[in-house]
Amino acid sequence: MQAKAKRTLLSQRRLQQPRLRYIKHLYSVPVFSSSQHNLAGSSALIVIYTQGLSTRVMQKIASNSQHPASVFLNENEISHRVCNIRWFNQTSEIKRCGHGTLAAAKCLLAHFGFCPSHFISNDKERFKIKRITGRVQLQLAAINLKKSDELNSLSDVFSHSIKATYSTAYKNGYTVVLFKNMADLKHLEVNFTHLVNVHNNAVIALQIHSINKNSASAYFRYFAPQFGVNEDTATGSAVSVIAPLIFRLYGLNKVTLMQQSPKGALLNYTFSSNQVVVS
Figure 1 (tube, rainbow, N blue to C red):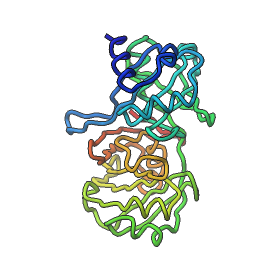
Figure 2: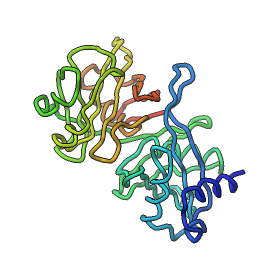
Figure 3: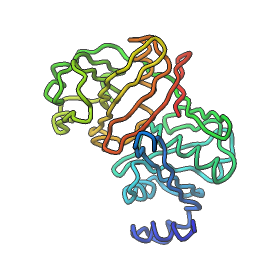
């Protein structure tokens, strides 16, 4: 069944036969879905390969995939405690990908009965995997933001009025945008052409609702046209930015996050000791 899926997928994409010999397994793995809330979540193509698969071929495979992320793991490393991981979207390599990493851990545990305790990216960032009663969770180091002055530059990007902005860096980081009203983020309109021209970070639009002393519900959308994707469907890595900001603003360390992308996603997290655990 799996071998048939491999031949069908790759032959349709016109990959040359010599490239196929490096690919051992292919899996499509869903994450962050919720039937209760009618949220489809996202998925990742997990590619387990033997030594010799080049970056160019990885990008070729990802370019021909319908998945938001294609994840590449070396077969010789998946049984180790630490395993290298790479992620690609249709146009470029991804710097960090939470949903792809969680999907890789779920895939290995389901199909091989084991998974590494850590994945490590090309930038040497470590992604810790926690196993609890047959389930896997992704642990990320929190990324703290500073209040930034992006109201003027982003005011023409969004249809809602901006209340405040927070950024991790000036370039190649994250900017979180809070809005003045509580309008549904599903109806937020975005001028992607303008966003590319005026801002260098991925942008997280965030709304926080149902706040009490113990918990809250929050809604967000993730935009990164500068990095090859106008809007991501389910963004696990964004939680490493959202969690410390919500704790800073409201003192809450446990929040249910709904990503209001077209497909929708549900992300639960806990925040403690500058670490975020996502499931």
